[in-house]
Length: 273
Image 1: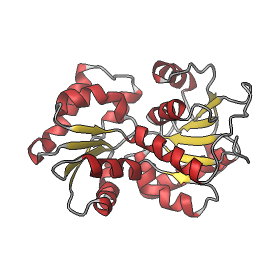
Image 2: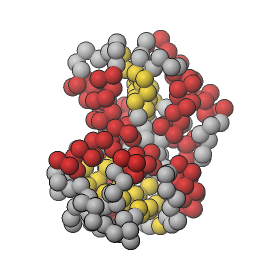
Image 3: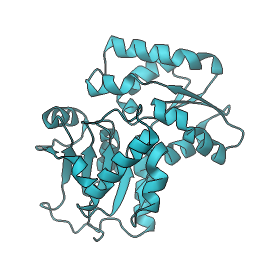
Image 4: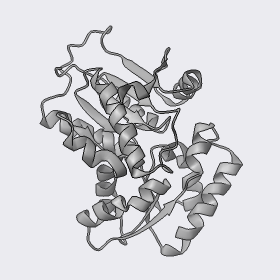
């Protein structure tokens, strides 16, 4: 493994493509291997033990690709499994919660922050803990939005039904006077326009996908792992793997990524147990 080794990225499905997109934009010289666990999504309703087991399998797979760092592009897996993955790994493992919390604690003007995410992420309380580490005065209001991942996976990004669901979920936060809202699931930035319409212009939306790409660049630079620019065109590529529905994943990826991908490979992730 050297500086020109790829970055590993994983999520329960297509949500992590928002992170992959930001890595492509902010770190254009880096190679990347992405895995979407499309056969077993959503993670947000799974037990902590199950999420840890799934995450370990994926990390084992990514390490067969000789990755130099791993981005856990899933808020649920970050909340439930990041600590274990870091203990067991000899390369940097980066989650999506810390970077988003750091930014949210900085941009809030009234110290009232909302967090929307999966049931697993919200019930873990991890956003609240990390936000209070950055700003002890902050009040955090979490809201689980379990239907949204499935709506994104179905491609209902601009559907009136999706907007209505978001409106119902945010109703609980309406009277909390939040001025900042963390989109605490990597699927949710794909619904940014709907969140903006429902939340209003006065609420700052924090996108963990953007912030984790910034953090990744800082860590690679700090550890002298950034690509040195000597990767030829044949080696400078992106690889995508899923556990199910490869064609559907490919079509969705090509609708949101800055570069078209020609091939998505399907693997049996249980082989890495």
